[in-house]
Length: 479
Ligand SMILES: [Zn+2]
Image (cartoon, rainbow, N blue to C red; front, side, top):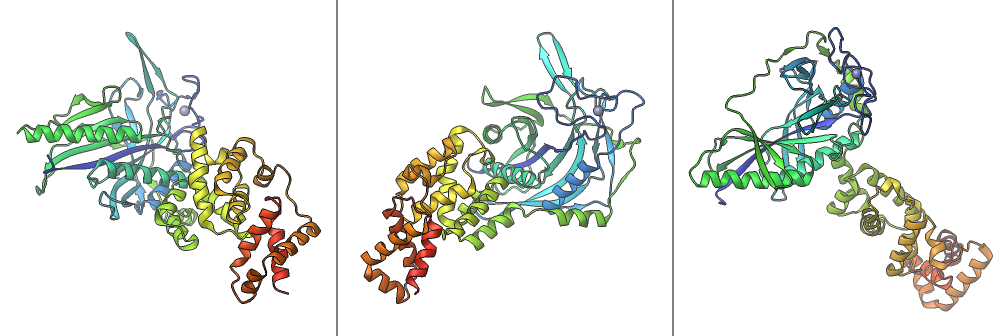
């Protein structure tokens, strides 16, 4: 069985975060809305209505194209994709065919063998979503709220070889979409939908095998399981001398298998032709340059910077940059930690270890926690200076997480001491008790400063303000 390899290509539809729909002014925030409340003659496909292109959607699509290293077309053309389905009242969908917006890009992933690999992007184009059918016994209902929502279709070349590579690709793509702020990428809400083209061939054979399309992949888990299943199935067919048929399959989560939806003896004939109601979309280079200047720092660049600037390992940096909000939180905490003399590394450990664990247990995002970046930095400072142990630090963080109280308050059951006179006395006592360390510090071992801070914190049972203590110590130790 190991003599076969899989060839996988992915198609992703991502819903763009525009305020209005792709070709009309209807409110695009339709999730959870009453059926057929976000509709108008344009998105219902009524005769005589005319579409108008949503400029914001085009901008977002170009931003994605730029982030995926694509060539941005000078002229893109909307085309009609003709097919009949009850959730598509016009009997065609406005999409792009011969002249898509963006082509020939790539996304970098780690690759199955851990070596960097580029997955080529064939095209990125805009289209409109369809309505949604609800089957109820022997009749069906249709909700047109989703009809006309802006979708970005992102298609790869068949460069993926394993379900793990497909997962990595999707995770990276979603991270980029979120960094750009153009899509929530929320698969549960249908804001990101995946289809895979899968074929299997004997290793060493240059030609591709017959490909099977797998639809309804609504979670990363579904992608992985469906691909594993389909690769196994096709390999078995070939290993027994059979032929894989060209079909469209759906992933049945409950049964844990792919199910044939329709045979595909010949390519679908959608009779594409240019949309007569819309002019070709001219994209000036000045506009593209303007959008390029607006691109934020993207995940790969930010990860590399975290390694170089904060001395993190590649895997730590990958965890912290996988979500833009997490990366922003980390950098804010590092800033607050710097003021307390705390390096970035322990902040990374506490954030991606204990705080992530608490977030996961409560199923909330980093933006929803009551532990501010500065509060996390304060906790890490207490642990790093030895005022509290790492073990009690965990309990303190749990309490901070639950109540929003500060680490210093919880650690001591009292508010912080920053009375200069009180602290100056304690500093004097600590220095008097450790003459040998004072001499070593004055002989040049200045890294002992943190140790002295820790001693003062212990003496005050964590109540001292570490910034005040640090300043006092520096003054006394450098007379
Ligand atoms: Zn509308």
